[in-house]
Image (cartoon, rainbow, N blue to C red; front, side):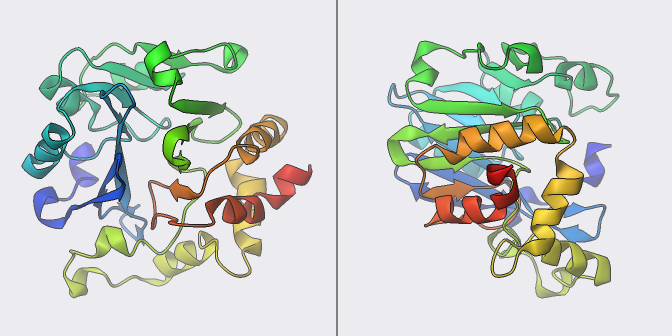
Length: 270
């Protein structure tokens, strides 16, 4: 049930900030399997048209509503960045009716089979599929500001976006940037303690320094279809970006392209 995955007091622990003039992040604590403190993050982007797009929504707090209003109030798109980041779609879609919902193949069916009061039966306007992923378009307004690549070879069916006006890459589980310092910054110190398994996972998903184990994890675990995964990574590797916003761990504020190239070195060379 989603209740096991959601902070009981999201308004108290959420960090809301501008990463750029047109991009706001909503960062919250989240522990995978109850042990690995990986954090969670939603990202709100103001398009050149003035409409808003929300990636990987987290809890809809009053402060989050106020930030949407501050940026113009017209939420036009909600994007599930992968097969896992979808729990809060319904409460945002209810608050902002008429929004276009976008996600990867399999997710509409997954949601339809859930018996969870937080997960509704909303229709998806665009569903990314492997067989025609390079022919999929969202609409002219959205596509003017974004490039996107469906990494169907990833275990979680990732969709990665580049916000071209400010050179920012937005993704969910393709690349973690542990530890999740910002996402746990409002949590009491006693709740930040990690056990052995949590510390081990944090080390495996830290892209800084010698990231050999992160490379191995991506190569052997994350890449379910390695050939397709490699091709997608090569597409993303050609994009021009400076910052990177992951769902898990801290935002990469500078030199993100260099970090990406190092973490995915094996895939880029494959």
